[in-house]
Image 1 (spheres, rainbow, N blue to C red):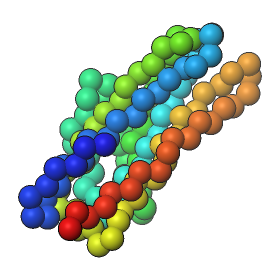
Image 2 (image 1 turned 180 degrees about the vertical axis):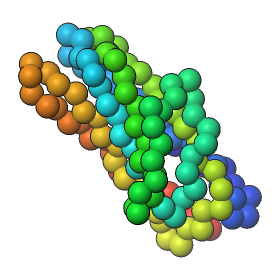
Image 3 (image 1 turned 60 degrees about the vertical axis):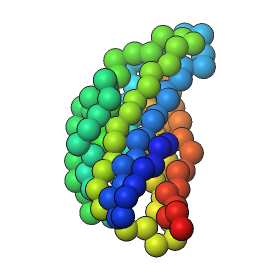
Image 4 (image 1 turned 45 degrees about the vertical axis):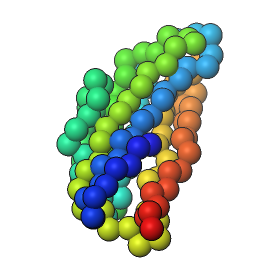
Amino acid sequence: MHEAGSGNVHIVKVLLNIRNRGAISVSNVRVMDNVPRTIKTPASFGSLKPSSVKSSPEGTIILWDIPFIKGGSEILISYRLEGKIQVIGSVGLPAAKCKYKLFGRQVVAVSNFASLKNKK
């Protein structure tokens, strides 16, 4: 994650590295990330555009639908958060979730929690 700022305007680049550690391909992969309502809805995305961007009472939900990921390969998803983010202490970005089916069972993988801290 990269943060640059002048005054109260910040730019944060979020990178989600989706990796298939197994030997077989997985299909119908859905990646979901949440942006808290204290941060503006992202408008700038990397090469993989989301399937949908929805508002919710908690913030913004971003979904990517990936048809398949080959065994041993990875996909990089990126987007940029920009705007007046007033951080007192720290603001957390919730963990991203990745859902897919493997041998008929639903599997959910969860990323790490990210914290944005105010530089003093």
